[in-house]
Amino acid sequence: MNRFYLTTPIYYVNSTPHIGHAYTTIAADIIVRQHEQRGDDTFFLTGTDEHASKVYRVAEERGLDPKVFVDQIVEENWRPLAGRVGAEPDFFIRTTDEEHKRFVQDFIERLRENGHIYEGTYSGLYCVGHETFISEADLVDGKCPEHGTVPEYIEEQNWFFRLSDFQQQLLELYDERPDFVLPRFRYNEARSLIEAGLEDFSLSRQGQPWGVPIPWDPEQVTWVWVDALINYLSALTYARPGEDLRDVYWPEVRHLLGKDILRLHCVIWPALLLGAGYSVPKQIFVHGYLLLDDRKISKTLGNVIDPLDLTSVYGIDAVRFWAARSVSFGQDGTVSIESLHERYERELANDLGNLLSRTTAMLARYRDGRVPEGQNRLEPETLDAVSATVLERIDVFDITGALEAIWEVVRTLNKFVTDEKPWELAKDEANAAKLDDVLYTLVDGLRAVAVALAAYLPETSPRILEALGQPEDLAWENVAAGKTVPADGIEASAPLFPRIEAPATAA
Ligand code: MSP
Image (cartoon, rainbow, N blue to C red):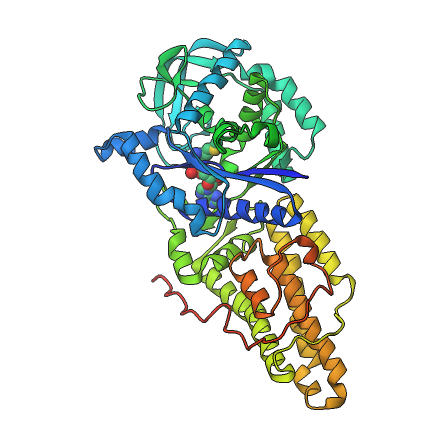
């Protein structure tokens, strides 16, 4: 059985989730669900990155003990995020879990035993927004261009990781595995970072009481990024009590993340793994940013959209659909509530919702609610081709391309109704056999579309199947012609996507 382990980044918990975070989680969930439909053995991990200095500072500002603060914000806002966008992770890791902290310490100990750690002095600039050191050359007017904040000057005694030793090994890895990082332009970007030369980095921080202590020097804590990256591995050791899932899912792991954290995942993480004696991940997919008025949606910039505000109006499926469809996955793209509303009306309510309403209404009216026997009159290869395209697209994480291929069938079915005019056929009993075929084609096509859409629309797909009297069997082989089973008692269905008032445009 094919194994498919997918991760989202673990999220910083200094503030509450916005649509940019929901975006990565939704995309990951779509991909995992599609792999489940193929029959793969899947594991889906998400969670929270809690030892950041920005988290500690927010807790301090509120006069709270950091652990009290993170417990509260994680349980109220972050753990529920997945469910609020219809995602079903297998495990939710928190970096404050004791099991994770112990694992981090063992991991670093292994790096030291393998000779990759030495003591040194770090002096330079640190951007708290990024939680990374930042070079003078990257600043614009003395500020971090992404966060608009002045970095802090730091000079401290630290433990360093010999990243520079890994340049050759990483270049060989990239040469051997041209699909290690996707899309291709991100592979090139990562490879040039490695080619440009790698500097050792400090993997500890001094004088900060919040974090995982360095095992041999408890005055220092582990740099939050090292602590965080290790989650992808540590989670497997305690996600299922009594089992070590590393034997099952490592290194069958794929990481999904935004472009801001490419270097950490594509350069530093594989080097840390090699240093500690682990295999590197199977694949890394780097997606772009959702932009609002051409700026990244981010807490620091203050232009956030709360995913809850959207799902409470449009429903979970519409938000998932919009996230997958409105920006080609991998690229940056501008989003707006207006664009969500427009797609909701035009594509979900009209193209898909009306097609189901018309089909069920015609079954009720012309065939007493029975799905007639008949022939699927779409080109025989139409559905097979879509099935193959979706698999191919999802294999390269192209959730947008896969969805477009499915939507093409929705459009074809709509055109089929307009061309065949079943309401005309119904006027003359002599056309009964033809009308049977037309109605069968619509049911069969919609059924296959519902299965194909299940990863995107997990609430709606079962409703479509139910309305057509079809079993809720989401196995991928059902995306094919002729799998419709006899059914009766079909009634004209209620709208899948009821009308919603247009959003008030901001003045
Ligand atoms: N804690 C680190 C990740 C550690 S993983 C070992 C982190 N957290 S984050 O909360 O700042 O961001 C998490 C993810 O959300 C990143 O993949 C980031 O790219 C994504 N997004 C945050 N805002 C986004 C947009 N506006 N658009 C798309 N994704 C963005 O980084």
